[in-house]
Length: 316
Image 1 (cartoon, rainbow, N blue to C red):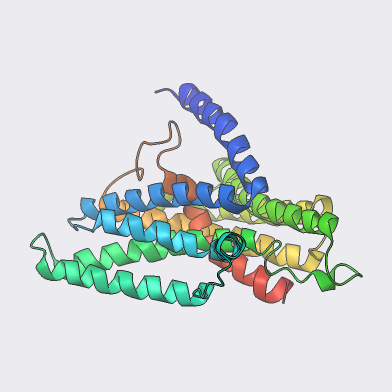
Image 2 (image 1 turned 60 degrees about the vertical axis):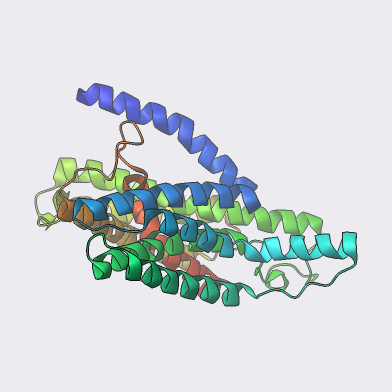
C-alpha cells in the first residue's frame, strides 16, 4: 500500500469512527460504558496476542470476561441506583448491595484466585508466566480503561454541585450542564491525545534530530515530543476556554502537561511490548491504523492519571 493509499484509509476510518466515539461519549451512561468496554476488550485481546508471541499462554477467555466485569464496576453506581429503584418500585424490596469499592476488591481477588486455581491444573506453558500475563493484561488494560468510565461518571455522580451553583443542589438544567461538562471533559482528553500524537509526528518529521528513546522507538525524537507536549497543553487550554466552564485555567494547564508527558510515555510502553514481541502493530484490526491497542495506548496510561487529578484535586 502506498503512502497516499494508507493516508486515505486512515482518514476514511477516522471520519467514520471519531463521530461515533464523540456521540457515545456525550451520551454518557451505559452508552459510554459500552464504548469503553468494547475498546478495552479488543485492546486486551491484542495484549494477550503480544504475550503469546513471546511464548506465554494467557487465559484469554477468563481475562476477557474479568475485564468486562472490571469495566462494569466503574458504572456500578449508576447500575446500583437503577437496580435498587427497580426492585423498590416493582417488589417493594430494599436491596443490600456491595459498595463500588467493595465490588472492585471482590472481583479482583476472585479473579486472582481463579487464575491461580486454573493454572494449578493446566499443563500448557509456564504457570508463572501464564498467570502473570493474564493478570497483567486485566490490570493494565481493563482497570486503566475503567477509570475513563469513572471519569465520565463523576458528572453528575461525585460532582460537587454546591461549589458551582448558588442554590447548592443542582436542578434539572444544572444537572444537564454537569453531564455536558463530563462529556466535554473526556472529549477534551481524547482531542489532547490526538493533537499530541499528530503534532509529535509532524514536528518530529520536520525538526527531529535527537532520538527520544531509540532502543524502543527509533523514529521518535525529542523535538517531536516537545511539539506534542505544547499542543496537548494548548488543546486543554482551548477546551477550558470554549466548553469546560468548571475548570480553572491552572488546572487545564496541568492536565494538558500531564497528557503531554504521560500520554507519550504510554505510547512508548506499548512500543516496548511490541518490540519485545517482535511485531509492528498489535493487530491489523483497524485499516490504516493497526490495532485498537495501537490507537488507544496513550489513553490506557493517561486515563487513571486524569481521573485522579480531576476527582481528588479539581473537584475535591
